[in-house]
Length: 157
Image: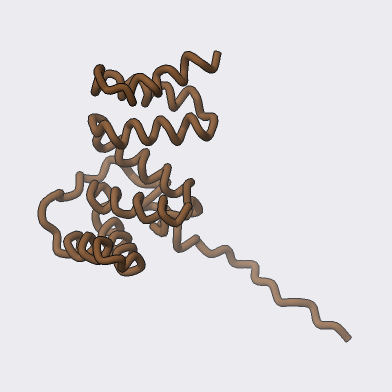
């Protein structure tokens, strides 16, 4: 006689965001943007995270960055570090979401804006990519990379 597997009727709240960032949903995709901004100064865990990352201790750096972002979800340095880790792990959905948050917090960050535009173009999100491509041109009108993105928009159609 076969026994049916047990099922539970309770629904658990996910402990990490479905995008794969490693953060809780309320610290990631469902973040309350009205929170005060994070301190950007010297925070010991961020220094430890950077040191671990620079020494090739990716798992340790990841844990420090996630812990820091749980407390300060708008910390640019920790966001950038976790973005780099997720990108290196080829977890591109999480990387794109983290990069979009960086650009939202720091819209004048040229490299982040250009990278986000490129990712969005690659994913076929042309309308959103166009916004970031135009911002890249605004930020650096003489940078050929910025105009390359702007050219992508004109070439598609």
